[in-house]
Image 1 (tube, rainbow, N blue to C red):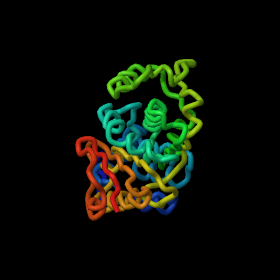
Image 2 (cartoon, one colour; image 1 turned 45 degrees about the vertical axis):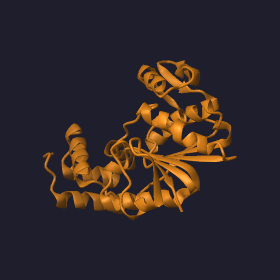
Image 3 (cartoon, rainbow, N blue to C red; image 1 turned 135 degrees about the horizontal axis):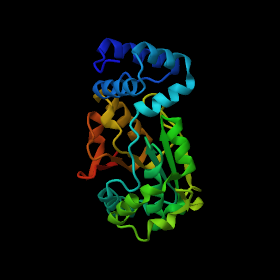
Image 4 (cartoon, rainbow, N blue to C red; image 1 turned 90 degrees about the vertical axis):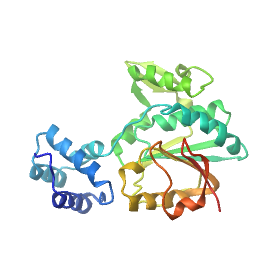
Length: 271
């Protein structure tokens, strides 16, 4: 398949996916979407016609396609400075609540939500918290629920954890089994992973902390503002919103947040 896909061809593909599977990619960044579709076709040696045929007739293939088309780059304690800022600016405020609800939107395979769980455990807040992880992709949600990751990744994750000023050793929070690191059951008791589409699904709870880091950069400005409005509507008064290092609040919704830490993109909802 040629690497240069026309805008007309991309529009047709996006429309096909919307009609057959109900997923609307029309407001995703067109350049990023074209790049990833071309990569999938090249790696699998598919013509555009063959790709459309698979997407139309093979539901299992669509799940695989969704995994490839959405960006699932994550780590435990990714951007350690962010977790330090979380402990400095957000945790003290959350201590005033009897019950705390956290939403990690676009959670991918779950490493970030478990990083929040570890942080809250060490800060004495985990037992009065409940943490939701959501993603558009069923395959990564299954991995997040399992809490199993390649053991070889734990060295990097342990370095991130130490740089994030972790209080113990990361080994306290997983068990090794057959080249896999399995998150301990205690850290899974107060977490729930489920499918949620930021493009089409609405508010499903009220949260004190929402983290959606490095997801909005793949949306166009119209969709970014729509999703930011969803987060605003999903936050309790004075709740916190955490965005990625390359993201920022934009549009009219930005006026309804107070900047807590501009460098680490932490904001607080104001009324």
